[in-house]
Image (cartoon, rainbow, N blue to C red; front, side, top):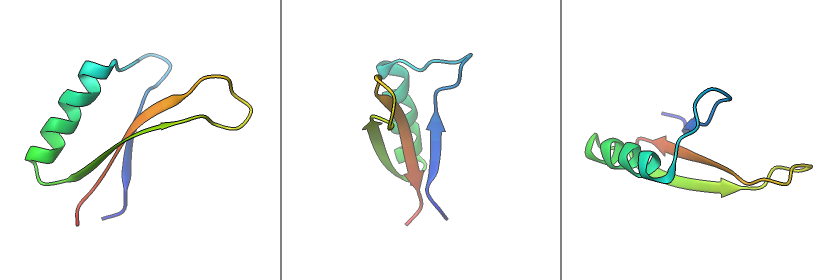
Length: 55
């Protein structure tokens, strides 16, 4: 399985607590999970997303 992402959308902004809960559920389901915080080129804000995959 390729790495999948759960990102914020314009209508749905996940807070840190929601992100951690999603990670917990994915880990319990057997996925490898990584929280990512990156600053896209040309933007002033960092974007946070969850990356997950099966090994």
